[in-house]
Amino acid sequence: MTNFDYEEKVWGGNEVRLVPTYLSYLRLKYTLSDLAKVKGRILDAGCGGGGFAKAISMYRPDLAVYGVDISRKAVSHAKGSNKGVAFKVGDVYALPFADNFFDAVIVEDVFEHLQKPYEALDELSRVVKHGGILSAFIPLEGSVFSLHYWFSKLGWKSKRELAGHIQGFKEKDVNLKIKEKGFKLEKKRYGAHLLGQIVDVGFFTVVDLVGRRLETGIEQHLENKKVLTFFKNTITRLTNFESQILYFVPGAGIHIKAVKK
Image 1: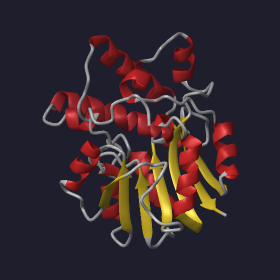
Image 2 (image 1 turned 45 degrees about the horizontal axis):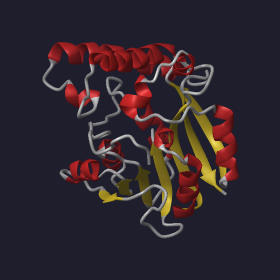
Image 3 (image 1 turned 90 degrees about the vertical axis):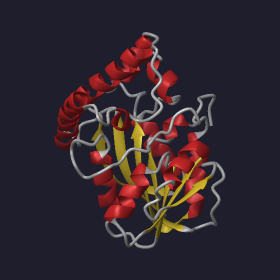
């Protein structure tokens, strides 16, 4: 995928719930909304440590949920308590599934890590049925509405170095490629607005400056640290509230629902 070491840290292994103190609260809420009428099999592509896929399975136990990730460490972590999800090691450019196998595919915070994101989109189109759903959150860190874009103009590389974000997408390019790959864009909701961007840029900048390398996600790292957890929960509530009320205003991320034609 990139020169970034995805075996160094388990990404996406933290618990996710429909509670505003969780960092992925809105993404889970929007994804469940996108899947409301879906029945059958769904795939979480780039599932990391499996936290998001397990949440989908918990809230929608009627679905057969699969998760695939290139990181053996992350998949091993996910399988430790799979919660009914079928996890596999696999490459998003060559998924280990037959054509038209899934009724929906979920892609949360994945495309920005890929050298060839639109080839991955081709592969996702291959495995999802006609009429199937693509539900995805995509950072728009190449957008003028993103602090990440402006900081990168000044040479800021903290998120690229610490989180492997090698793509800076613009919304118009994402919309065009989704249509080119055989999907019809049905719904979009923006996220990562100003407060959320300040927190994100500030967090990665500080971690970079002090030379820290977290081996888990921030929510896992703060377990048993009550004061820091309280602070994180307060900030997370505010950033989730901000994006929930400003979902129609361009931000540094977009959650899309598309249907394969």
